[in-house]
Image 1 (tube, helix red, strand yellow):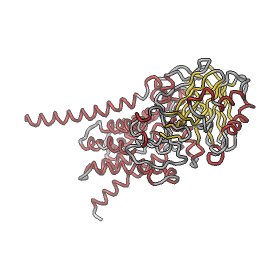
Image 2: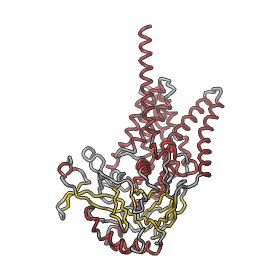
Image 3: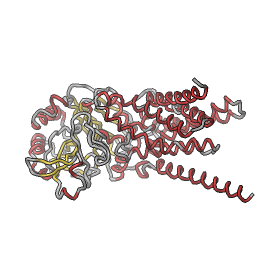
Image 4: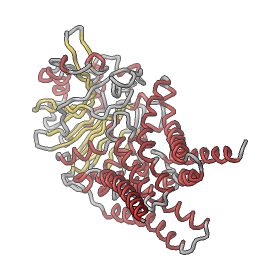
Length: 537
């Protein structure tokens, strides 16, 4: 084998280390700190492409290797239960390839803003991931730091994107320091100080905030029901009234006059019927009758529910959209929703439909463009609702927001709810479909991040996973992962004030778009200016 081919193989092997480091440090890993050096092998390999004939192609392959190793490592369990068609999900790597490849151009030209471009481009891709139908924001870099809430208290100012920025900045500073040491350059002491400062100062600030933070708002008693009903043999097979009585048997002995909310997991009510019939729904009435002695009690529960579609013909390609179905019994086209409900004695039932659906499991992304793939688990094929509620308002004018499972990865849903006045969050999950023990820990860690970003207490209610209470500092103050039915009861603080992040949103992602564009425009202007000067000379 020739020396040139050997060098290219080495350049393609080195990025494997970046993929592995990103994978082993991804949530819910205790090795999260490896993120701070994970990109260094890729950066070394990227510089090695500059002397090759096709640096852009080689760097594209390097990026692809990183992302494939990373996503296969953290998501191999999906392929164990799915057909190979799910590999189409690797389309998620395209934004990384498209936006990050110019980094090689900048370092080839000696542009000092090359690191800034790379960091900005990565942040932009994470922003895209949060809004794409096939994105995977689960593994955004900033989420991994939720393993240690004491060091990310400043997320209330920056959101998880601030964590991504921190991780990438440290990687480039360490890489630059390493180059200086290898090349024998002087004044490397300043670089050591920069690395130390950028790494340590945010942690010190965060710990100071953590130790001095006081929870805001009045307290209310919340009861989480942890039913642990088996998905395959119990939950979707028994009568809905029998299922509700299982919940009530756990719930009723724990209720007091102080209990404001009872929280049930995702799809706890497996058939909530038609939305148009909610004012005479017998399941809801059964709950109200059984808890009539607690007039201020509110039930927050997950439910599967249905809505008829008038004038379905106005929806383009409606017969090709898996989430739209026809009922022979009712002679109507309809949507199926994965929803959260608020049920109380003296108010109409309120509904919020899940917006963050799981790609390929709960809905088919871009169904008229991409091929339909059989989902993991049960083929529910849920839909989104055009006019959707963001917060629940109780009779006493208290506001809360309920989010369902995968939605916990989408920070924008949470800060929008905080802006609308939600004083606490309820996260409803049904983790019984997953055999991987990491999955419940991942969801819990994401709830920790959302709690800090918005300074909201969270009641994290799961079926067959981890149920927990999380305070406004992101501490898990009570939890259970028992496979037997149980409950958690806690007084949690209700906060009306908004954080900087809740108020502004993901401004770091927006700033990254601007920075990436300015870097590109600046390079173009510089190139044109040089060409113009050369022509005049």
